[in-house]
Amino acid sequence: MNGTSTSTTNGPAAGTPQVRLRLSFDLDVDICIVGAGLAGLTVALEAARLGASIAVLEGRHVGWNASGHHLGTVMPGFGLPVAELIERVGLEDARELWALSKEGADYIRATATEEAIPGIALTEGALEVSNVDAGDTLLSRLQTLGEDFETEVEGWQVDRVRDQLRTGRYFHGIYYPKAFQIDGRKYTHGLAAMARRAGVRIFEDTPVVSIDPSGIRKRVVTPSARLRASHIVLAGNVHLGAPLRRLSETLLPVWRYAAVTEPLGERLAETIAFKGSVMDSDGIDHFRIVDGDRLMWSSPETTWRARPTRFASAVQRRISTVFPRLGKVPIADVFGGAVGVTVHGMPQIGQLRKGLWVASGFGRQGLNSSAMAGLLVARSILWGDERWRLFSPFELVWAGGATGRVAGHLIGMWGRGAASAAGALARYREGARAKEVIREARLAEANRQAGTRGPPPRRRPPPGGPRPARPQPPGPSETEMEAHPTEGGPFVSSQESERIRDGSV
Image (cartoon, rainbow, N blue to C red; front, side, top):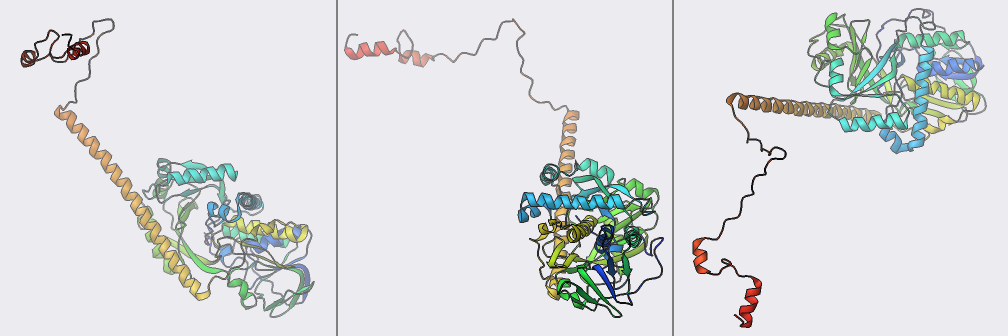
């Protein structure tokens, strides 16, 4: 599933502490978590609820990067397509992994309530649409998801998709009725507030200088203090820094940008009737309606950091291309963040060595995977849950450094170009079929008006009436009668031939 790093809000969420606590004294805890993003905060909250003492170290502030900038879509699955997941680990393990992803989505639904996090703005439903006419592929995926993975899905035909999305660019769709979306920034800060209330100590502006994972008590050094812990969880992204560069280099940094329009009024409702999240099957566009009549749209991405405002016109053009009815929409805000994308397309979850854990690589994975990782790591440390071993086939793989970034950018450009070409071809074929239908209808109408008729219908005799005589074959001609003056006509029987041959005639 696509994890897009964008958010509707720009400032800190309501109730976010304005004073950041920095670690300035030595500390001993059960678990030290590096990174105050969604995965790290989930580990902290769940481990604290299970009775452990927790410290979270964040080099900047809570949710400053990808975790605080996303569209908030929550649905099961991973960035790796389900068919490739089955091919990689087999059907049984793929089903267990999928069940874990559903568990992560259920955790967010239970946590992101208005009572726990006011203003979370939860809405239901997600729709994955195809840029090409791929009905057979749709049926295969529906069968796999519904029967093998026990996920509630519905297949939407072209007419139903276009009734909800007034554009000719989309064909079939898969509707996830149990998927939902929330305000991502508020959810991140809500998790932090809940963790603090559970006893978690979150230290911001506290970068990690070095880590010594050896021994029973691991040591973490910061600029102003030292910390010891039985377990260390690396829950950072591509910004883990020099002490953890080896882990950072297994992630390809991808910056994804998005925009929120000004209020568009009735024309938005007339163009987009679907109230949930919409993403295309090629991973190019991801959008949804927010605040009633504003459109939040994510599309451009780079493998290098850039000012988000540079992409306002790109988002604007993309919206007008997909939905010409909207035209050139006014943009209110543009924002973005970096995600870490793994080479194999799956998150990195598990134990690197005794007491050293990783929960990372959530680029293009979706919110459910970060919640799943947090639950899994906390329960593995404190309960001995061994399900993290399901991720063992997806090892840490070097992402290629600067060369990998260039290659990733070129592959991304090629993929988008190929998807665009395939979509254009599908729309051309659809238009050609429509023109052929119109041509045939016009020809039939012209024939009707000109009085052109087909062959008369074959008449059948009335029941019980005399049947018409069958036409008889033509008799022998006079010439043949003269040439063969036998009584039987031009041919003699076989008996007469035998008599002539015997001399009896």
